[in-house]
Amino acid sequence: MKQLVLEVEEILEQALPPEETVPTVLHESMRYSTLGGGKRLRALLAMGACMAVGGSVKNTSGLVAAIEMIHAYSLVHDDLPCMDDDDLRRGRPTNHRVYGEAVAVLTGDALLTEAFAELARMPEKYGIDYQTTVRVISEVARGAGSQGMVGGQVVDMASQDQELSPDTLRYIHEHKTGALFTAVLRGGALLGGANSEQLSALTRYAENFGLAFQITDDILDEIGEAEQLGKAVRTDQAHGKLTYPRRYGLEKSAEMARRCVAECHEALSSFSDQADLLRELASFIIQRDH
Amino acid sequence: MKQLVLEVEEILEQALPPEETVPTVLHESMRYSTLGGGKRLRALLAMGACMAVGGSVKNTSGLVAAIEMIHAYSLVHDDLPCMDDDDLRRGRPTNHRVYGEAVAVLTGDALLTEAFAELARMPEKYGIDYQTTVRVISEVARGAGSQGMVGGQVVDMASQDQELSPDTLRYIHEHKTGALFTAVLRGGALLGGANSEQLSALTRYAENFGLAFQITDDILDEIGEAEQLGKAVRTDQAHGKLTYPRRYGLEKSAEMARRCVAECHEALSSFSDQADLLRELASFIIQRDH
Image 1: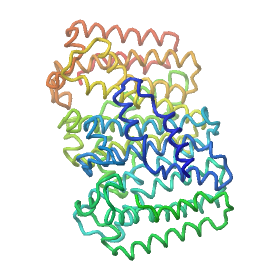
Image 2: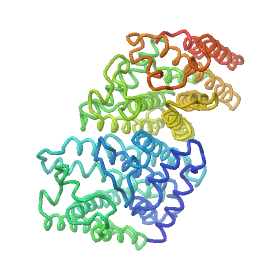
Image 3: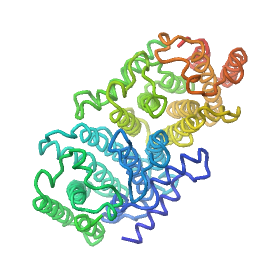
């Protein structure tokens, strides 16, 4: 897994426009918020899905770069003063604290755009056929858009300091983080040549993975230390956000996360040991301390 | 031309997610800033380029929707308090004045993402082949990204209240508005089945069109009335921005714009009357009063 994370860094390093290219401040800012840190979970999931269906991991390089750029853009925008107003991210000052708000907004915009540019380069750079390229772009756009990640973020923002129903809490998580997980799992699987049965199984894996991830994130926000997490803690509380631990208690939340992970393994039951990376990731996700 | 503008509205109306779809506030906001107004220049250029090379204008529907969403997103983000801080756009309050800053940021993000989703739907919705679809996505991403529109905006923001060289002024215009014009002209041409010679001619048209457009925009900011323009005027002055009229004077600037339009017509010299929409648009661009 560590080896793969290094490969992800290398792929991103190559895919991002060089710092010397004009406008240098923008490219520096894009690299500041994308390189150097992060668990690279989404990238590993894309690779894992591709391997699970017997594809070559090299096929996922474009998706890996794109999805990490999209994840980075979403963090840059989420951290803005008008959103979560965070100062710390991955143990470093957030983008707008370094480059100012205007450049931070534009950095997010540029990363999102560059992600699609990189996906559209897959045929030329990695020999992916055009039809698969278009399908992967569709999956990513759906997962990241108004009925995916951005939609979840809007409902999350609108719900602060409000009584939330469990349904709304679930909507937020399924969209804010879950939709992009689904996109990378499905995208990685398509790049590996998945059939429709495999695609369904990996979609089920993705949904449960996303929920387990989010519940664990909420638990860590409640019990973790800022130093270890590399970001501010107790922010959910401060913003009056409803979370799983606050709704169901720590014990019950941890149990729910474990059940999701069991579902992940169940979804992979018909896969060979080629799916072992996905199995590892599912178990890792609730054991992590950051 | 009026008939085509109505068609563009209809295409956008269909392509944008319905207001009733959750999250409703986001979809309402996306529609608020995209529908109802605007000259639809970029859409008309895409249609014009496709017709110029003998293609069916229906082929451009996906590009038309995508490019107007991208244009709308860029305006929503440009108007933010941390950017140009504008209150008025197309004669109505800007997006963040209606929906607040957080939703405005996310509205821009969602529109940009939806644009690529729409482009990726071109094979299924309009029968565009996959290879052309990927090429068009590449053109749009390049035109909108860090070395296109967003790059121009970054340099523009960084240049406020500074002495600018003519080279920097030109860089800003070529990127901030020009790059997207180039993308739509080339995209429309590709969707019409252009050969490489036609593509070069239309690229030359695009570059000159973009410059003529921007110079005229600067002149209108200097001499126009807010009511007619539907947005604040004298903002360039207020922000200490260097513009063509301020650098070269009104007379000389108008002359430069006219020369660009002559270049546009020159670029179309080998095209039949199928290129008449592009010819009209080039002449219109410097005669407009809003």
